[in-house]
Length: 259
Image (cartoon, rainbow, N blue to C red):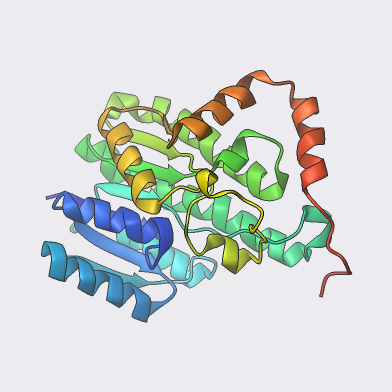
């Protein structure tokens, strides 16, 4: 029986990953801050699939919460076979207009947390010579798109490098690179996405289905939809200075000083 630990599992892509792995008969360890929402996800999956769900409430930006999840990953008596680093958030304004404390929190959650949790999981995966690490990145990381994109670029590069290091141990590593996905992410970040057309949006289930296919095929990166696959192709071939200027025009300063 495969056990999967998923961060940010109370909604959005995290909950979709939980459903996708539950459908495959996996046991789950669900991690997020909101205990009640985690319990609701666990209850729904247990009812629909008979899934064994361990609920692990933790604030990953709190040292004690992060340590608790790292300890669970390192527990040899209750091995975790697949780690899904999904937790994250964005900010509503470009870097110069956000409080630096918010920028640091975002960087910690997008970079430090997956680094720490992956490091905790790897000894057991190497020892058992099986398993996987799935890191949720973003198409924002393919081009100059602010500090969120810079952090996600690190996630993708980290995943691609780690994949090479873990290949001799039969441990798979996948970077999931979704585009705009219908979750709570934009609302929580205070982003105005009203101008986006319906065709640019992805459904969480579609992202997860593609990711699980790509994981089974041992691909290094998973990108859902032809639109975003073309976007990734263009990102690799267009001059970055040209793209940086285009992206800068799209990032607007807030109307007034930050609160």
